[in-house]
Length: 205
Image 1 (cartoon, rainbow, N blue to C red):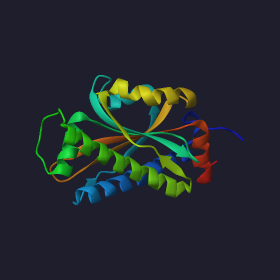
Image 2: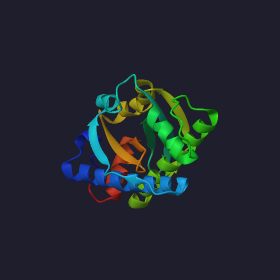
Image 3: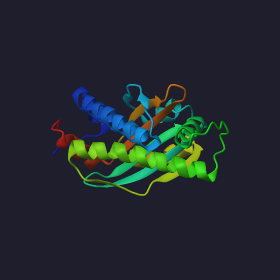
Image 4: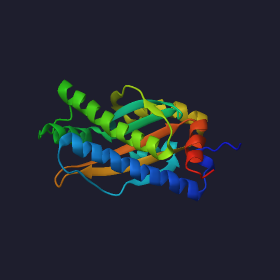
């Protein structure tokens, strides 16, 4: 059986992955709305297959300080999932959850704990929707929160991308209330076999 990487996918297969991204991001924002007990609006997610070397630029540059929640995925599908946002947006997100108006980019221990829980719920909701749509078992590890320069954060999936190609599925989601808008990014990095399992379960290979 032919093995596909992101580099090999045709337009139809990419459209399928984009639709999965739209649905997953929508469910993640719904989970966030339940968490903070208020309506959260979401712009149409931007789902792109792009060169991995360009991801840091999309995030604002290699030296931009970002926060990321990282989960290892095992089961029928194996890989890494990341939810990434810059520190200013991380602060806005924590403010939404805790009813605060802090503009200090240096987060307290309590704010860091809240951000980890938010990232866990958002990434978990995205992963659950993907598992349901593909009917495949996907088990998420305990989430790990890291705050560092974008280049350092991306070095983790970069090791995995070295095994599957030079391109990545990146989903940009803008959400928030009428006042505070937050821009977050999902990166899903399945291994080669898992890409084919996902596409096969959707009947596109």
